[in-house]
Length: 114
Length: 113
Image (cartoon, rainbow over all chains, first blue to last red; front, side, top):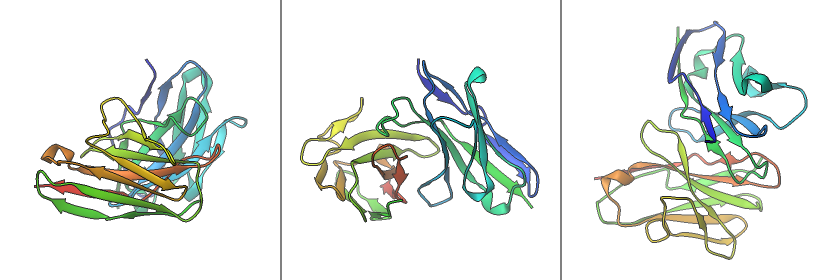
């Protein structure tokens, strides 16, 4: 069955430490891939997207993600986390490329320690 | 990207009543969507709001419970009808245009007493 998996429900890191959030998908072909962030009391903000081409994509707020076809993964990274990065992060896929069928992972809650 | 205004931002409602949520976009968009985010959960698509025709509902969601309107390319409403405590959720509007990613409003935080 088609699915999006974020295996980490909750991650805690210290401010200034590096971060990697995992996302795996299960689709027949490479879907369009996205990372969104939801800060407390806010809607979702798009961090970055992958459609095709360079497998390392840069996003806003210093985030990047790497698409690995062999692992069906699209992990989100940041070299140095800031306290303001504390939020919920959602990986999402669009298998059709039409912006009509967006399926979300279960989310990863990030806590940043001072 | 489009600026999306969603109203109300939050509400507390009585069991058995209905609430209409509005989503206004500052530019014409091809697609508008409504999602539900139950407490501690991810987002689930309720329906695609189609301009000038009936919305397309996902499995598990019906028009009688979640009537949707989309009178033009910049505005849509979602009504949550005959509410029960299980309807306590965040309801989010999103928009899509061409092959651009979906962008989301800030959501409506709904609590049912």
